[in-house]
Length: 118
Image 1 (tube, rainbow, N blue to C red):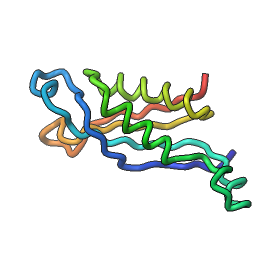
Image 2 (cartoon, rainbow, N blue to C red; image 1 turned 90 degrees about the vertical axis):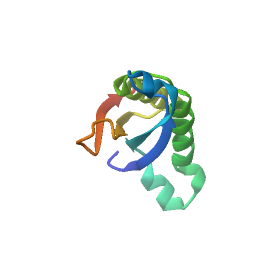
Image 3 (cartoon, helix red, strand yellow; image 1 turned 180 degrees about the vertical axis):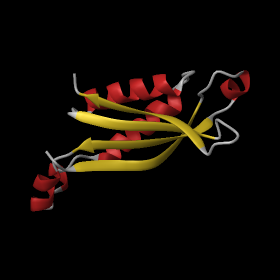
Image 4 (cartoon, rainbow, N blue to C red; image 1 turned 120 degrees about the vertical axis):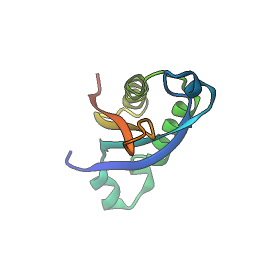
């Protein structure tokens, strides 16, 4: 399958970080996703039922991340990738989690994972 769907700059607020001030209020994280999808079949028929529901994926990401309370973005990214691969039967996934403002002299810090369905 050579077609992919991507979701870029999905902003979600969650509790993330190791410092005491980071544990008391939600902070913004930015999620980028990319995954193979059966684009040709949906495009050929123009039938939503044959398309991968990326709104459902975005909603799942938002719900999971906003309820999370991890210390590390690495843990958040790993757990989110596992959830998405399983729940949506994705063959593979590229996922980036960024934390804007984590370093005062950098726009953002993040981690990118590439995972395959187990």
